[in-house]
Amino acid sequence: MAQLPKLAVFDLDYTLWPFWVDTHVDPPFHKSSDETVRDRRGQSIQLYPEVPEVLERLRGLGVPIAAASRTGEVEGANQLLELFDLVRYFVHREIYPGSKVTHFERLQRKTGVPFSQMIFFDDEKRNIVDVSKLGTKWCYLHSCPAWNEPSNPNSRIRCIHKGPSWTLRSSHLRHRTERKSGGHFQERRRRGQLLKRQYRN
Image (cartoon, rainbow, N blue to C red; front, side, top):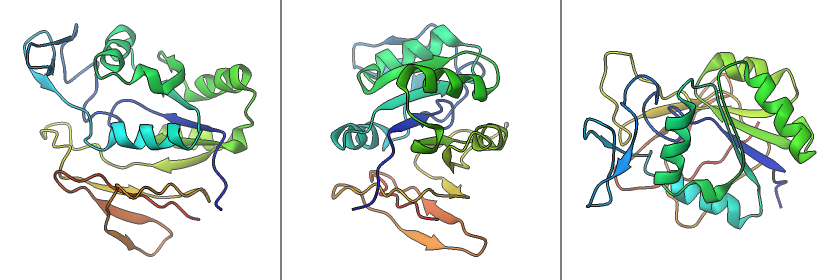
């Protein structure tokens, strides 16, 4: 059986949801009568469609989950986690501006988990570079569109430039994965489907 991480750490913007909470949406947020999460202007806000099931799968495997975000919109980010009912998955939340090295050092002190037993999901290379120096396994989720392009969480290609040896499987997930040269994978999101991801070195 593949070894599981002792802590899975997720970024928020362009990792759990397809926008920057301090730029593309307008807090405070609320849930409308139809249970849709909306911002102050009434704009509908959604997660990437597979997020809840991926988090549920990790919890079912007994892998603790934490959040590490550099956003300056701390209150809005926490509000979205509550409105999307994701708070129950996170044992720790480190949400504040600054280097993610600080976020991880605090997570290590709180949990006692070695950096080498953590896995980190993020869409920004600068965060990956900083955290990888601690010895943390990581997955680079390249999904951020150009700044002037609308977000579409159902039609993206994510390039994972390095995968740890851990494997996450679920019979509920379906995927199409193509191995490319240079040791990375490309995965295409499909409408109405949850992706199964397999990360290997």
